[in-house]
Image: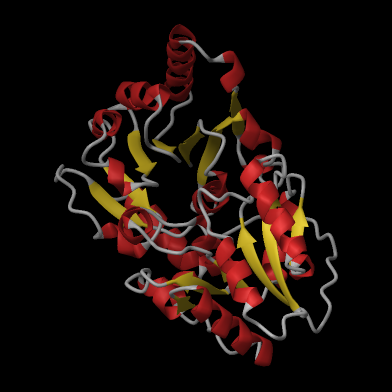
Length: 357
């Protein structure tokens, strides 16, 4: 049996961990997790799959010296326990990642996930990591060829982390006549344009059965968020939203996704970030639960999105799509027939890359 170490020192990107753990475990690897303390707190559904779990508490590793000492301890632990491979779930930016990957170079096989290809050619920290890690995963097929990588020794392989644990059901009751359109993530105007939804709703004559589920904390203390929430009431459309003023537990989050009719990406425009360098987390949620997307134009060149989405350019087009859904909720739903959505297919791609020479 081979030994793998899966490392995530940030407090995010944990949605990619479970699939990898399952791929590795089902391929006769033992798995050691080195994870941020915040991830540890919300990972109870899969921690038992790891042989060892080491917690990275950022509160106790603040200064430069502490980071170096902590990293050296992890290096010695990984070597002592005979790791064959180490996978950095976020292979960028952090001093600890730079140092640990450098120390492990030539000692174990190294892999990483690149969540943003914009950094691969120009970021100094990424170039330092690239000296140690030559094999990277990306999270969609289109990212394998979307950027010309200057370092020709780097290899890219896509995989889709679309497997999630079975969470305890909260038995959500969805009225038969309601149409749920989910928007994953907290209310954040830096990432999404929620005003598009308001604009579209105000153009519609019939909308009572339509529910937009913002799957994250509304954080009403934020001024921009507060203005938006008041706007919903002023325009008498607050009944068209399901909102939360608290952090949503994984079980509730995933049950809403599972019971949604569509997933919406509310954006007025798509820049290079999402057209060229990275994915949105909503993609893999849609793929995991086989949901169709409502997307802004500018993403049609991504095959998966093209096949499983309907597109709008502005609030007017979004309102037309919503009207059509009210008339026939199945109108834009697509079938996920490709083998690429099967566990075994993704496992073979992932393990095949890890075990390649």
